[in-house]
View 1 (cartoon, one colour):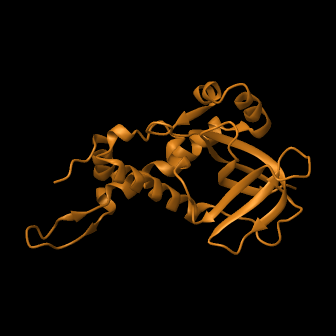
View 2 (cartoon, helix red, strand yellow):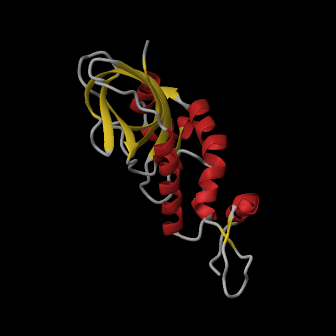
View 3 (cartoon, one colour):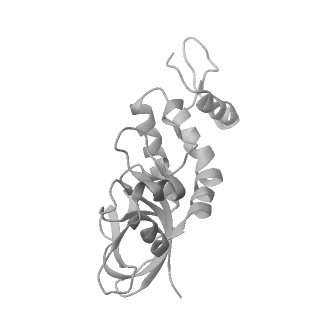
Length: 206
């Protein structure tokens, strides 16, 4: 039987009462549960979203901190992903005028002007297809060392992204010209990287 970390075993144990019972030749009462999906379910709303809300820095102050040194800003405001050269992941909040938007794609996005100069300087990733691992990597309680291998760790990122995809409410209609307020996570390997924010909340400013 593959090794599963103590954290995943705990989640599995907690999830047992709601599990589907399946019949097998060896054990008619065997319990089928996906520990990765269970971990995402257990932590997404109770731990991850509160962490992002609590740790989020406003766009302007985070840009200023990063301009003085990405690593220093990351150690103070962010969390680094696993592996050499991994991005710093920052919880961020702010607002901006929508310069362009694509809401017909499965990977919806909005291009925002967050500093008032008339040019887009930030992209909001709005799903339902959520790319990347920023949501997993912003949280220190998802530790690569607790997982069997990179494949299992990648499965966790997908499970978390799926949770967000189901939960994120995106404003309807033509967003161009409107001001959006958002909270999310931006991954940066370099201070010069374009900002692509995975939004966990987005609303039209009143």
